[in-house]
Image 1: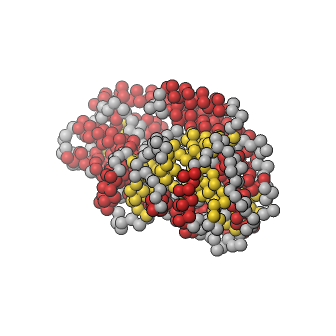
Image 2: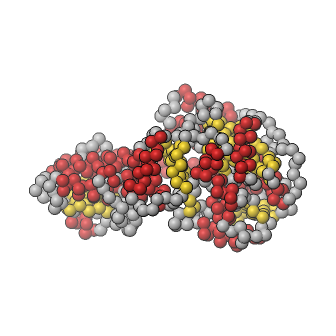
Length: 587
């Protein structure tokens, strides 16, 4: 019996690994980030569950945890990429504990879409049309002009396109998960690239490819493939592409052969998932290599292909099978809570999906629930505990969401009534303001995105109109003093003639309220906050959208929006500012 510590027990891969190794008779301890409840805690195959810091939220704290705990065990299996990255920095210090993870050379590719995509192309794998933007070595300086060649290079792909950045360790110590963002214009691309440049992130751009996901899973040891497995994604979250909520085992020998060629080029040792996207003609396009156990691991385990156990045997030098085990085609495995419900929800909410498809998808979910041949991520006949806990946790979360929705609905009706009253009273109150209007105060929630933009834009337009002595200030309701405008928004507003690179947020002061002749706010939340804290200023406070006589009174907060939505929000705010200045009397 081997003592094993598995990190990230709240993830499906951690649950699958614990079941595999515990069922084989090993003593399994699972680490779960503090404050999280994890279904793995109810598994009969887990000897102990311990708390750990989150490797994503605090790499330094997680490394200290590993130094204190990992050497108590014979084997350490880091599950998430954040845990793997932290463990990689401690290889020598954790000796003699065996580490079930790729080598540092392999991590260069398994933690980077940039390098993995280049490698895939070098061995002849097809990829989506790609532009390699940065391997982490960015041009010196911080001028947006430095990014012009990179933005120009994206013309070959056309818009919209996908910008993909790899994981990176932020200055605050967070290990930031790599993400894919859809951009629709050169302005959005430059804004995002400026932000990623600050983090020295590795970035590629690719054309978005319709289709569905497919995966090849391999275990290699001493230059040989020990295990092979392949599946295709039947349902994804969201439905347009993402993690799988329903997948099916299959045999795809050509795709497996291409994947083995890729890993052989690296002389790869250990487990890996090679992810593809099959286009509408069924042609596979390489996406990435994951050098870790994967979230859909349960399907392989149900099919009798036990990657965690064989990975451990490789590390321990135990005898291995002389042939790779076969498995059935067409075996399906679901993640019901929350996977399948999230898949269905994303499809039902999509305005572009026709009604008949939505009805069919809902009916399919019902039929799948009564299909006895379907296997499950959480519910195993010999280990039902995790499924019961997952159902309980999801029920609690659903209750909280429904309660939150009720509260939001009540607030929405209150906000709507407030907006109507404001719209009805705006003209009369504005005409009743004492003239001249010498001081304008612009407020938003944090004084980070909207109000500083409006301050600068109002001041510039006022000067152009001959109101050079108009004083314009901005502030926020939150105590965010000193916080800067995110780089993406600094870049996004430059075409409007506004420079927010030196802006620092400030909390609104009572003196500013008293001195202002006109107060402009962005939305009903700002208006309610002002009425609550400064009711004496209600008569001179206006929603900028209503005062500008726009169809919408509220300016949405770019901080909470996609790049495209943020660009539209700033355009709306710029139009509102110009309209307000045009309503101010020229002195």
